[in-house]
Structure formats: structure tokens, C-alpha cells
Length: 351
Image (cartoon, rainbow, N blue to C red; front, side, top):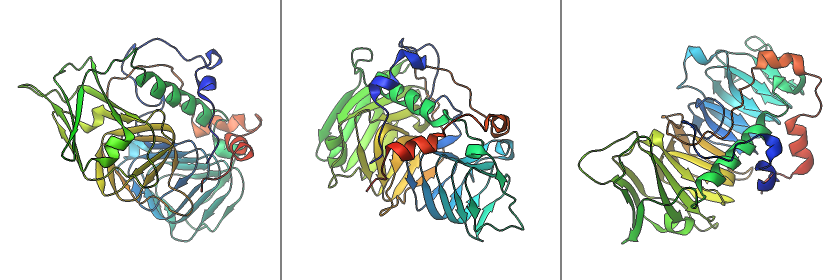
């Protein structure tokens, strides 16, 4: 498994991260919500992602698609950002540029519909009549882009799981195979916090989040703190229903997990798991995923990423870092080691 930066480092004052509670509505990252997937390690996928994708390590996919739910207004951004090496053998990046810090391997069936390819290593296999790669140090990716987002996500996840600052105000019950999470909080300015274990989540055949009372307020933000990791034999599965809550205001926070397994489930809401490998065998997620790794080199994850693309709830804003632009970053080509080089030096690929 890839080596993580420590939580102590992530919480350090040198990073300039606030320690106070919510100041205004914030997300899982400091970047725009159109990043539907943000992974600090490696990405091995076998299906599609409809928003933007960022991968800090290496990415390997075949017949894959990125960004088909985006629009032409996103074409000036990076639709796909990879800090390490990219193997993309067939498929499409529908909107935006592709920026790769290391080597790029395409085949004739790989297309970039509305953007350019920037790369820092070598580029092979691409259709030269349709793609004109542009060599740029680190593919134009800021040296601290991934480390800054990882530190922020770790800080956010740790803060949300702090029951002293954010006491659980929703109830949970696992009965007859159904895990029911319920609350009567209907205030868009408040956050409903639930707490369950990873074992409970994996053992339930159905999960329901419901808002009690006569009126629903889909703008209420929900944080489900999931305690612990799943074992190889455990998997999040079955039905998942929202009653009175909106998927783009729900986040499943796995602050201490190192492994999350899911199969045959439609996950409603976003997933925050900065230390975890997310093994998503089948199903779809309607939300944003922020995690360490996606799948493994031997078992790519086949789950689909469906709209809503981003998390739109009201979470604490703990830091503010502008997102770098590939074109602005061209001037930064000579600034030291890249994030991908640091990752490769310190880590091994997951098994």
C-alpha cells in the first residue's frame, strides 16, 4: 500500500490549516466540486467517471471514459490529472485537458475530445493525427497540488469524526438486516452526524437514511462517520435509500479506514476516505470520492461514478487554496521534485 503522509503532518500549523469549526459552506477539497474523483495514490478502474478525475500516483485503465457529464465550459480545465504514469488504452476524455506528470501510454482508440495532452515523461501510442502532445515539466501540474489536497482532506475527515466538536445527533439501529439512520433535524445551517461501524455497514443488507417529521429539507447536510476498516471478507452491499435527504448533501466519512469494499450497491452520497483503498467491484456512486487508492493492479474496480458529481453540503472550510491552471503552471517547470517522484520514492504499489 502507498505510504501516507501522517495525520500529525497534515494537522501541522506549517500547512496553514485552521483548527476552528465551520466558517462557511465548504467541500471535501479546496478544488471545485467538478472533481468527482480525487485519489492521492493509484487508480485502477474498469468503468467510467462522469466528472473530472485526479490521481496522484499511477493510473491504468482500458476502454474508459472521463468527463462525459461535463460541459464545454470545463474545456479550459484539466479533465484528467495524473501525477505519475498514465496507461489509457482506449476510451475518451470528453472535456478538458489531460495533464500527466510522468509517462503516457495511449493506443489508437484513445481520444481527447475537447482538450490537449500535457506530459512530463514520454508519450507513446497516441493517434498523431488527432493528438499533438505538449511536453512540459511535470505535465504542468503544481508540485504541491496533490499533497495540499491530501492534507486538507485528511484534516477535514479528522475534524468531522471528532465527536467532541461534532457530537452525534442522529440515531442508528441495525435490526433484521436493515441499518436505519434517522434524524429530525431539518435545518440547512446544521449538520446531522451519524456514527456506525464498518462492520455494521457491511453486515446490513439494506441501509436507509431518513428524516423524521412532517417536512423534508433536502438541503440538510449529513455526515455518516464510519468507524474502522472492512476486512477482505466484508463488503458494503444491498439497497441504500434516502428519505428526506439529498445525495449531494450526504458524505460517508471513513476517517480511520484503510480498506473499503463495495459491490452490487448504489451508493448515494460522497465518500471521504483519505487513508483507504476503495475496492468498488460493481454498482454506482452518485457523488464524489476522495480516497487514497481505487482498486488494485490485479483487481481493477468496476463501479461507475454517476451524477451528482460534487458534494454541495455545508461543511467547515478549513483552508483556502486556489486550484492551479495548467497554463499558468508552465512557468513553474524548473521548481524541484514533482509530487509523482516523491510518491514513487516513498512508496510501493498496492497489492
